[in-house]
Amino acid sequence: MNIATVGLDLAKSVLQIHAVDLQGQIVVRKQLRRADVLPYFATLQPCVIGMEACASSHYWGRELAKLGHTVRLIAPRFVRPYVKSNKTDAADAEAIFLYRSRRKRNRRCCRCIAHVLVW
Image (cartoon, rainbow, N blue to C red; front, side, top):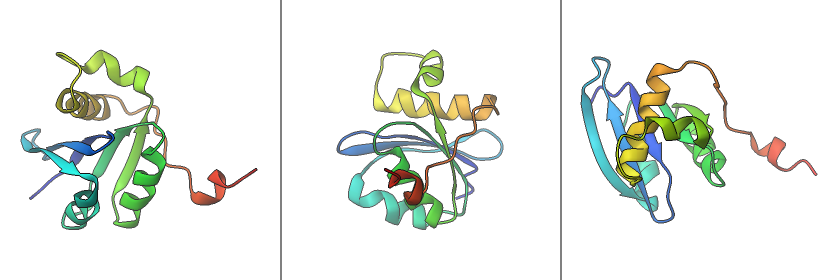
């Protein structure tokens, strides 16, 4: 698969993926259980992954960065205007992708573990 950009919506038990290639065609739209996320992304070529900043986003960002992906966190207030329909995991993942593909500002990386452990 030639995935260029992924919108990843983080939830309690399942994570929603919205992946698009360089031409803007949707390649993958699926849900993954937490245990399946890292093995799935390990099979992909490095790509840009956008996700909403939340409690677990730094953990997932660090783990995905270890696999060679570029991870960008987005504040939830910037994602909300891009949700086209009701608030579902799939709609949120698509909105994250749309924001990531249209806006180049607010490029926030994940905090490294050393920054998290600062008292």
